[in-house]
Image (tube, rainbow, N blue to C red; front, side, top):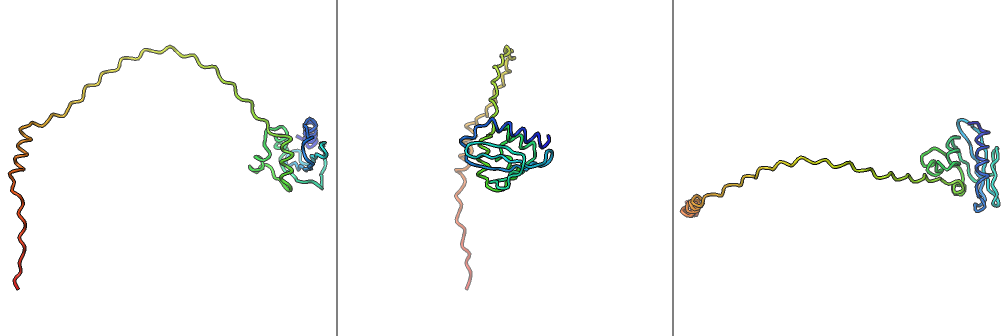
Length: 169
C-alpha cells in the first residue's frame, strides 16, 4: 500500500469516529516499510484531523509498519499489545497514545454460533461379558498343624542367662 493510500484510509476511518469526548492529543505516525512516510492524527477541542505531514509539536510518536497501522485503525490489532510484542514503537507521552487508542478500540470477534447437537446413532447391542472365574480362596491351615506348632513352641526351654566371664587377679 502506498503512503498516500495509507493516509487516505486513516483519514476516512478517523472522520467516522466520535472524538468529542477525547482530550487534546497530537500523535505523529511514522510509517516504515511499504508506504514509508509520516503523518499525524490530532484531536483538539473535540475535533479530529489526519494530515499527511510531520507534526513537530506532537505529544507522542508511533513508529510502525503500514500494515500494523491499518490493523490498529481497523480495530484488528490492539496498539498496546502490538507495543508489548515489539511490532510498534512509541516515543513520548504514552498516555496520549492510550487516549487515541480508546477512540479506535479493538473490535471483539463475534461469538461463534453453537452447533446443533448431533443426532445419536442407534446403540449397538454389546456382546454379553464373559463371566470371570471365581478366584481360588486360600486353603485354611489344618487345625492339627496349628496345634502342633503351638505345642512345639511351648516345649522349648526358656533361654538360660549367659554366664559371666570371671577373670583371675
